[in-house]
Length: 371
Image 1 (tube, rainbow, N blue to C red):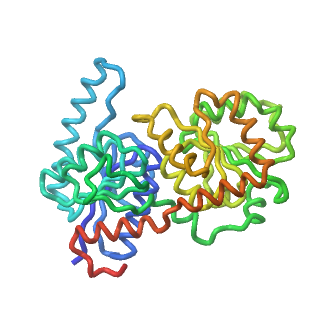
Image 2 (image 1 turned 30 degrees about the vertical axis):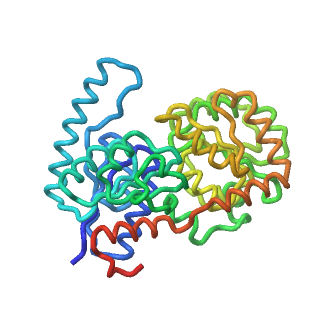
Image 3 (image 1 turned 180 degrees about the vertical axis):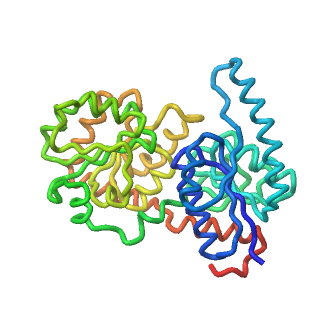
């Protein structure tokens, strides 16, 4: 008989894409498996997960505000409601294993799962474990991590080094540079700078690019720029008729496989999923960690690469003046590009989804399924 699995978490593409990779790997091994996602109401997963063909239920959970205030009373109330709803979901669905991939919904769902003695697995993406996962680790059955040295946050006996799952489409039938150049209508013979700010965008990165748009327009390079849907209208208005011919911008890049295939240098935030993709592809990158994340974990992610000479980091506060000059210096330095790309490729941990599902299946007592 096929088993049942709950996967909880989300909030950003960095949590959703790995979650889907795990679900797809489970389904590949056990086509009859029951898979239910649990996300946070109103967040991105409530749209993206059903679009990928999986059912999802929402919890009204939110994150605590950093500043003390009345808003946190509402947040605590929603957390209590979410705990009761998580209990109802688990009682009805009866999963064999509960998996948490990070995001608001993971907390209450895995807390109740442990209380009900349901085996649970945490997938910690970052090099610095957040408070929620550190608390959940006490009762978790297994903790899958992407960086070494995580024993300082979690019980060593529960840790398995797996890496972070990535979007499968990026690594199957990878397009060549010519096809990718034609897709974006850029020259295959010129260096390409790919600018990413995540699915929602990154204000600091966008403003830094806008501030130097004339300089970038004079360079003999091609620029592909994902602005994020929150910022695309403002950028369109700011550029007006002065958009340089070598700049192509999009609110969201649908074909990231094409974007990565043509990119010579990448500017990006330092989310765990993006870093994993960059390492697996061996791409030189300049990372601008977001300051708006819990416990500044993006800076710690970026520093894990910087210490291995596998990426360049620009602090968010320095980006306006330093980001574009550094990017141009890098894109014209072939030797440094090759060195960074080679070093980050050595940090890659491939087949992460498969390794994580190995652990999930062990917890479910389903080790007879094919590996």
